[in-house]
Every structure is written in structure tokens, then in C-alpha cells.
Image (tube, rainbow, N blue to C red; front, side, top):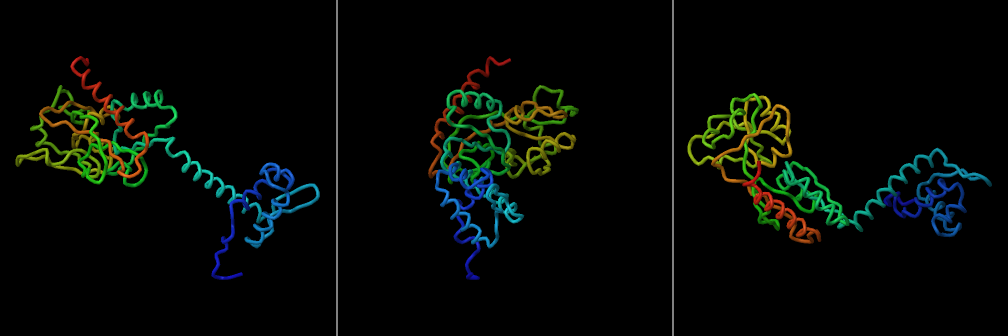
Length: 300
């Protein structure tokens, strides 16, 4: 054997499929029937596999076929490889049958459940999956999703994007904080507190305070870290209303923040080869945010 030639050279999936079919069916004849090929082809593929691997894989008698010790090990690996190959084909051929929407914190906030329900009702042919990924693009740059919900300040130029709505800001407090008894908090009061900020995916920056008075800052790493820091009472947080809708936690109270600009909510996607359902998803999100805005004056 050529020492420079990898042992896997010449190994084909059909060799592995024949091995598993023989063991599962219990005979070469039945394996051939299951695979839709001749018994001779089954035998050739098994012999080729044994030659490539340099080991005998099956004990054969006139009545039974059983794996050798080496065959048991190879059979287990063969099943894994075949399963992976089948998944690869499925992903490639049905990729557009799924729509992955990424987000860093809170998907569509209070609209999330309604978005999922309407999508399932109107587009059952395209499975919707929401993925939380703690990255500035919600997993889009990492290739984990087709679209991403973005609220944090981000340079949108590298991406195609659409504004779907706005969300008011709220203050997150420990439930035993004196402010938790108030109906709302003013923006200028925040400068006297310590503020929890997620620099990676959060929506709060020091640009919100144009004057010299700014709050002290404690940096956190993700939404769970942010909530844990606030629950201790040592700091507070500013966040879009979506966070309050998605993360109702014991020990955390949310109160409206007055005098603050709302947070813009964008959907972003790759410019090249967008998912066919991209604009359908955008239209649904826009409708939900518009409906909520129209209903806001009559909300209880």
C-alpha cells in the first residue's frame, strides 16, 4: 500500500451501506433486495470495504452472517457516517423548508408568540425556528440563521435590512428597590445609579447621556448575567420593552422610562442568496408592530 495514500481513499458510502444492510437484513440476499441491487454487487462492495480497511468484517456461514469484533466497531462508525451523510443531503435539499431567525436577547418581544402562531397558520410548508445567539448579529454573521432581529447599535451597511418597528425603553430593577414602587422613572434620574450594560449585544450606551452626569457602569456578558446583576440590587438596567415581555423573573421588576428615545427594531439578512421567505417574515413583523402601536392608546 502506498504510504502517502490515505487509508480512506477509495472508501465510498455504498460500501458502508452494504455492510449495514447485510447485518440488518441477516443475509446477502435480503440485503440486495433492500438496497435494490444484485447479490453480486453486495458481495463486491463488502469485499472492497474489507480490502480498504484491511480487516475481516463478517463471519459468514450457510445460515448466518454476524459481525467480527472489528466488524462491530466498524459497523457503529458506519452508521454514524451514513446518518451524517443523510442529514447533509436533507439540509441541502430542504434548507428553504426551514426559516431560522436569530436574536441576541428577546426575538420579537411581546409579538413573539403571535408571530409564531400566524407563521404556522399561514406558512406551514416552512418551519420557523427562533435561535438565541449572544452575538451582535444574533448569529447571522456566524451562519446560524437566515434573518436576525437587531436592536443593539450596529453598522447595518454590510447587511440588507428593514426597520420593522420601535419599542419603548423600560428600567429593570430589583423588586425590593425603592423605585419599584413608582409608576415610571425619569431619564435624568439614571445618572445617580449604577447601570448594568452588555457591551456585546445590549442596547444601552453612554451616548444616551449628552451631559457630564453619567451613571456608573457594571459590564455584563449576556442576558442571564445582566438579570443576575440587577437582581442583587447593586445596579439597574435600561432595556427595550421586549426584554420585559420575554424575561419575567422573580426578583426583577420593570418600570417605564420617560424622556428616552425608543429602540429601533430591525431585521437583517445577507445580501446574497436571501431566504425565499425573507420578505414574508418582514411583512408579518411589520404588521404585528403596527397593530400593537395602533392598539396602544386603548391598552389597559
